[in-house]
Image 1: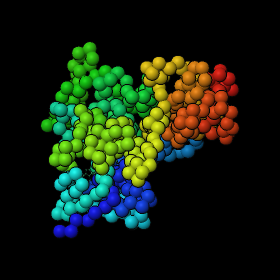
Image 2: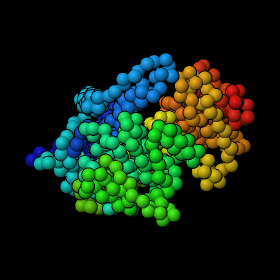
Image 3: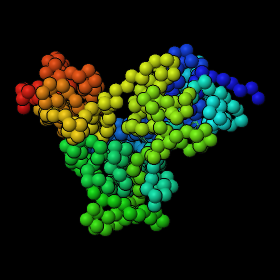
Image 4: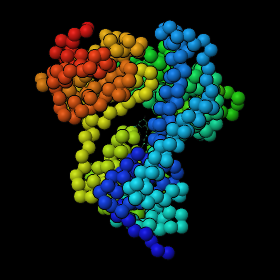
Length: 463
Ligand SMILES: Cc1cc2nc3c(=O)[nH]c(=O)nc-3n(C[C@H](O)[C@H](O)[C@H](O)COP(=O)(O)OP(=O)(O)OC[C@H]3O[C@@H](n4cnc5c(N)ncnc54)[C@H](O)[C@@H]3O)c2cc1C
């Protein structure tokens, strides 16, 4: 059989893989992408996009049902068609999948889809019966759902995020194991649609990775929306054999309890997906967490094989995977990697949203930096008041002496859309007074950022 040869073979078509493949083609590399499943990977098919579709649809319903009257709108008989909500989500995904296929065609990227890639030797991959050879290989196989050792996910009564994105009806009640960002987003969807949602979180706060002040504010807002939290509590068993699911829990004080719900959503994180690639055959080095080890140039322990995205260390985020995909391919084409890992924003798409970038106060202190913080509440922002979404605040972390902005932590309306300005400020080492000097349009939510920057010098106008 003739073995087709490529400059670059990309394994996986998630945001890391497909973006990397397009950049490779732009740089003139003859490129093949191999995708076992669906184009777009986790992000497009069972991650970012479907979750944001359902978050938006459920939020529209929730606003109409609970807040329309505040605007003088009478919407007494608001109801929803769950099947249609899911179909809309599917149609968004289908359109983007077709979009990626179109971009591959336009950029003359070959695609082998539907069969997994497995190493035959360090330069040859077996894809079904076909063999392909790459001068360089980029691994972008992403991640899969993690579970607890004693919990079996059946995607019927004990579901993962994947199952939660394609239920056929709104469950009466859900116990969500893990109040991380995926848990609170999907819990929000179903709580808005009427499910009784209870979170069990091992740590003593919601979304433990974020600034504690944001955690606290987020929990309060989600509780106002009817969700409840068992924090500092671990799950010790799940029994889904009966009609209702039983979840055994134990608080940090050793108090035991049992929760009962129609469904259990396991949302305890994700793990790198390296199974089935035949990495052991080629002697690839893996980390303790099971991911692929890379150097600062995305190179694995094997010279011409690179790896990016969720299978390597770092935050499991689509935009981080994309940046790495581009950077790795630029390295392969002879360039230098250009990623500033200190400014990868993260957003939680609840209501209100949470957006963070750069160092938290605690991280800055751990690094031995002397910092001060300044806060400005959306309550004092005219646009937030005008649209009736004035919860939350902007918090800036700045270096004490220079007032250079090191971190931004926000909870409030559309803060996910506002974080870009602060990411640029952090990347470019902008001072608070420089940011405060920038004329922000009025009335906009972004004025809260200007005011927080002013407040670094205790000169905010509206508080
Ligand atoms: C519910 C949920 C919501 C999320 N929301 C967000 C969000 O709002 N923002 C954000 O930034 N991130 C979000 N994420 C995380 C985001 O989806 C991932 O960080 C991102 O998809 C990682 O991209 P990747 O390219 O590394 O891998 P993936 O997207 O996982 O893609 C890997 C691809 O490789 C393929 N593959 C694996 N092994 C093989 C093989 N042997 N041969 C061929 N193909 C193979 C897989 O089929 C898959 O399509 C979310 C995740 C989930 C689960």
